[in-house]
Length: 316
Image (cartoon, rainbow, N blue to C red; front, side, top):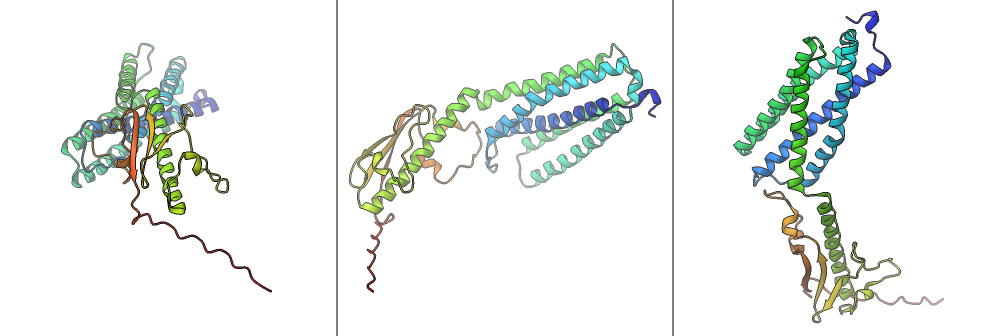
């Protein structure tokens, strides 16, 4: 029971709330990160993945910032409890730790229900077993530690707490390091985004070239012919070098668009499973370096638009 000498101050209240909040987010992101690794190592043809690398980046970003905050706050609270043993009886501490036990138990139960449901839907057995193992180990470790922490005495030489903190830090930061082998470095991610912009620009230019041909029954001689002051369209340039994209007329219905890419599009997606791609993405696959896309306009598919009739003058 909270005694007069162990009344919680506003600082204690917010520190314990921050510690528990950072714990919840860290556990959630850590489990998500391990799930993504399992999906990567054991791909499933029925697993259509959107934003695989993005999911890993979000988990890594969260853990890099939030988990050290959790470690720092819990270290401070432990030192404070050693200096003031009566603070172990703080009501806010006991309420939050008991709520953590409850939430850990709910997490284990709910995640197992979801995993079993996916297994019944046909998920690969190996993936199912590993994900169940991750949930039981991570959530079970949280439950076991705080269950023990509620009943132990705080001692200056409390080695189990230090050992568990070291194990948790090694596991979390080890998983973060593993992520960079999958998604690549920030520099590689930047090059990937430049290549995505280049592919999008070429798709836009292709649409404008086809529209120009439909309107004028001829291909533009250069990309500058696509400029339209009314719509405000100006052909884009390479986002990294600001150089113009290469455009060549090969015939009355044939043309090519070229760009210099930094990465091979086949290697940009690191997910070995069946990765969902937009229906038109396969038409823009490219290698590293200068890549050209040859196009032939089908006049039956892209019919020339009839000219608008000239407005008739109304006589009074």
